Image (cartoon, rainbow, N blue to C red; front, side, top):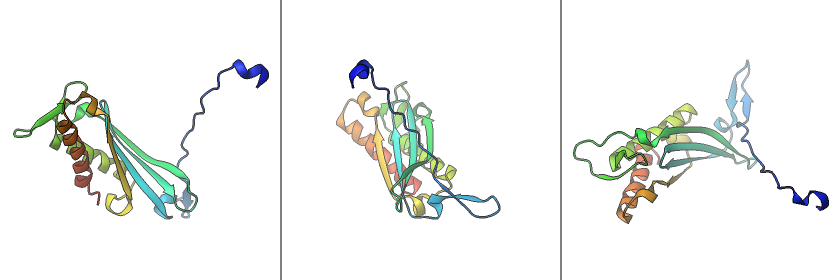
Length: 161
């Protein structure tokens, strides 16, 4: 170390390379995950400010993982409650949320992410991870439970097997 021991280490920033493509003749390129064995995972999260779906694929031949697609929407854009729906919480900016409205937002985000990547939820998706950060503003474990159920229902409504 010697002379340079007083210098702080700089962060190692890693960029995700795009998934490899395979040439199909005459300028046609197909992402490798469409023709080779890949384990595809969707990470679905509704936080205080954003709702997102990140699709990653791991090549079962090389073990390398790639980000296939990301879809991000604003959590405040959740639809308003319909008559008869029970409000169980609110977003960071005070927008009321119901089981049904969260379910629909998660469903739409998951479907859009797959559609943009030209993937099928039923045929191509192998696993889904759900998470949330909204629970900090909730007052009871029941509200957290409703929220987690809404995330799961959104995945089921999108067609996750």
